[in-house]
Amino acid sequence: MGFLKKDSDFASGEHYSVVSAECYFQGTLSVQGSLRVDGSLEGSVDNARHVIVGKDGKITGDVSAEIVVCGGMIEGNVCADMLEVLSPAFIKGDIRAKKMIVEEGGRIDGQCVIGAMEEPAPADGEEEPQPSQD
Image 1 (tube, rainbow, N blue to C red):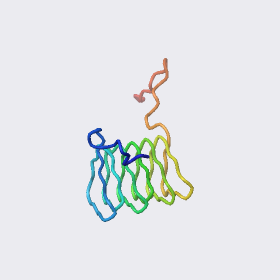
Image 2 (cartoon, helix red, strand yellow; image 1 turned 90 degrees about the horizontal axis):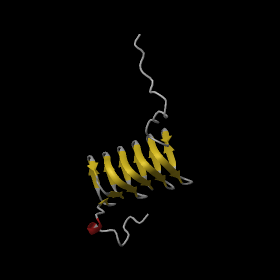
Image 3 (cartoon, rainbow, N blue to C red; image 1 turned 180 degrees about the vertical axis):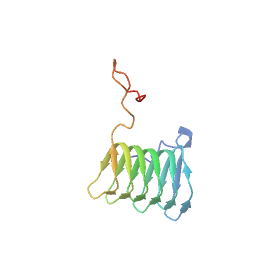
Image 4 (tube, rainbow, N blue to C red; image 1 turned 90 degrees about the vertical axis):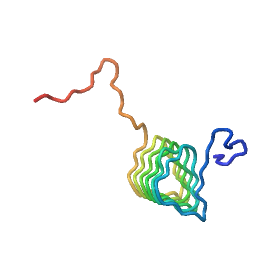
């Protein structure tokens, strides 16, 4: 994925936050850039661009990001444009994503809603249903 690729640095506008293997964080993280979790994060992750959970990483809380790659464990709901569940990752919670890939060995315990997240707009010439006035 190129999470720490050579041309990605703070000068390029890419911002990275890391919860390393020795770290434990408790609280809500509002991340504008990318987040990698190799330790334990207890709380929600909001508005992130990328969230990567390493094989020993664990998030206990809801995750909202454009792209989520889970190689460890997430106990909470996940909302993403793209979700990738690697082997032997485990997600315990509901998933709402536009696209999802699950590697063989990746596990999910929850409901999944995959596809477009918006209500379809009425086709040309059709009117939106109006509530009855009975």
